Structures are given as C-alpha cells and as structure tokens.
Image (cartoon, rainbow, N blue to C red):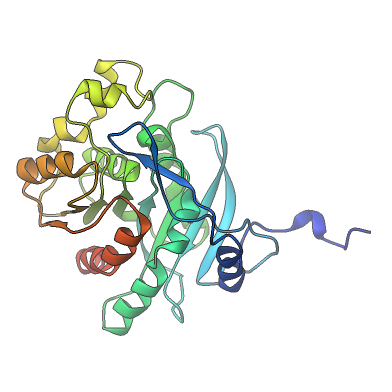
Length: 288
C-alpha cells in the first residue's frame, strides 16, 4: 500500500542521499562534451535521483522544474556552504558539459570549495545549476536554454529567497554557454570557464551536428564575439592536454582575461576538481 503523501514526494535531496547515490553509481560515467575526435569524452559519474523530500533549508538540494523555454522538466541544483542561511545569498550559475546534466556539479567538489573559502573569510554565495543542451543556445529545435537562464531561472531563485544571478561558471559545452550568456548580460561580476568547448572553424563546429548552418554557429561562437566580453570579469582555465586547448588559447589571446591558466590536465572530472577551489575564489572575490 502506498504510504500517505507518497505521491507528493519532493525532488529535493539530502546531502547524505547525494553521497549515497554517488557511491552507488561510482563506476558509472556520464558523457560530457565531445573532443576534437569523434568519440565522446567521459564526464563525472551521475548522482542517484532524489527519493525522498527534504526542506529547502538544506545546503544542497535537487528539484525538478518545468521550463517553458526548453519545453521540458529540468533539474535545478542549488549548492550552498554548510551552516549558512541561503536567504539572500548571491548566486553563480553553473552550466554543465555535453551529455551531462546539472547534477554533474555534485561530484566536482563545489561545496567543499565553498566551505573552505567561506571559512577563510570569503562572503558566502550559492551555486545554482540547471540542465541544458545544444551548447546552451537556441538552434531551432523549440529548445532555448538561454531564454530559460534569462527569463525563468531568476524567478526560480527568487522563490527560494536567492538573489538573481551575478556570475556564471561553465565547463566544456557550458563554457560556450556561459560566454554566450555574458554577451547579453554585461553586468555580470564574474564569468569563469573551464575547458570551454569553443570552435576555431566552421568544419570543426559542423562536426558536432548541433548547429543548423554556418550562419547560426557564427552568431553564437564566443571566439567570433570577444569584443562583446569583459576581460576584467573573465577567467579561463584549460588543461594543456585538453582537445579544446587550442581554441581556449585563442580565446585567451583575443580577450586577455583577468585569469588565464593553461596547466597540466585533460578534459575530465579530475582536472575540474583540481581547479574548483581557484574557480570558486575567482568568482567569490568578484561577487563580494
């Protein structure tokens, strides 16, 4: 017999549940952004779907939201430091890589980095992640992630007593999306990208089978619109062995961002975990 209230089980999840789910699925991997080869690159393992209700006062929550812009339900993941009220916190939006979803960030040490940064004196902020696709742009499929970020996400955050987004962080495909968002939101205090999936030519972009034509790709490609980006608020991280290293070096050369770090590393979760404390500090210092 179904227990009373079972049909109303929330999509929020406790931090303990997240850790149990991550352990249970430790040997599984999500697909992340594709490299220059045609084989997809592997991303962090998925976290188990929420199974029981938790109050939104938890430091880490996962919920399902209906996005009209994307015409589907999406995960909304909110990660805040432990022991800090989420009410009124500033927000950095995190955009995941290709083949992953918002829960990707639960396995990358985001909360640990937040906890350590806050303990060291940095003002607290929250990280909010949502699901996206197609390099986080509208490619004519009735799915507009940028509209979701601009028109829907601020309202979802306000419902949770969080401030509108003032910073963006993107990994791989999410780096493309974060830079695209920054072009239209020049008031952002920080834009951080890691292993940004950028394309130095149309044949390279065309091989991803995402953009309808060259004109559509050119309208979105960050490397073709660096004049619309703020160097002072941008940080770029990329591993030297990353398949997107060439493109990210081109971004660094064209933009001369506040932080430009090419270091040993590949296009994987080990590299992203390693740089997470630096990214959190970069974002937090500018949001403060």
